[in-house]
Image 1 (spheres, rainbow, N blue to C red):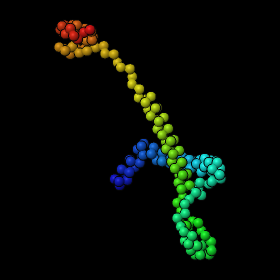
Image 2: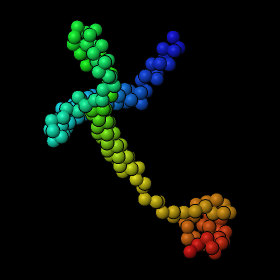
Image 3: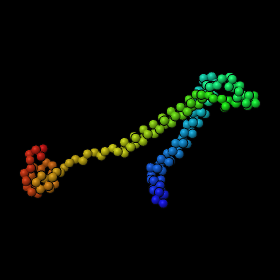
Image 4: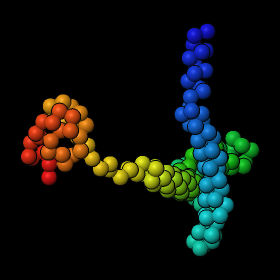
Amino acid sequence: MKIIKEFKEFAMRGNVIDLAVGVIIGGAFGKIVTSLVNDVIMPPIGVVLGGVDFKDLKIPLYSKEHAANVAANNGGKIDETLLPTINYGQFINVMLDFIIVAFCIFLLVKVINVLRRNEKKEAPPVEVTEKDCPYCLSKIPVKATRCKHCTSQLEAAAHG
């Protein structure tokens, strides 16, 4: 039962809940960025590059003999998903996703830091108007040359 109590205390801390919310929102944001890259950014780039669909860009890692063997085992049809390839077009899409997400996080952290700096601005320094008498330790004005409580003569360097 102690472990359940400790877990409950851990889970109910503000930081853990904030982290969970951040992860969920981050996942949803990642899907939005992926859609932005795949459905909005890459198609026009593909058109400019001559009708290229980046998802289809790949380097085959098989020989014609291997493809013929796969076709023979599949009733004469070549199933491209069974052939090994390096999908560099998909990699380009994922890298673009990452760059956009990283840039958005950078901007978010930058804004948060500016807001924190504005909150932490220091109050103007308080002007010191009193000091302690070195003899009786009573509070006296900074410019005093004699203590009003014990009437001790204060050092000449203490005023001025």
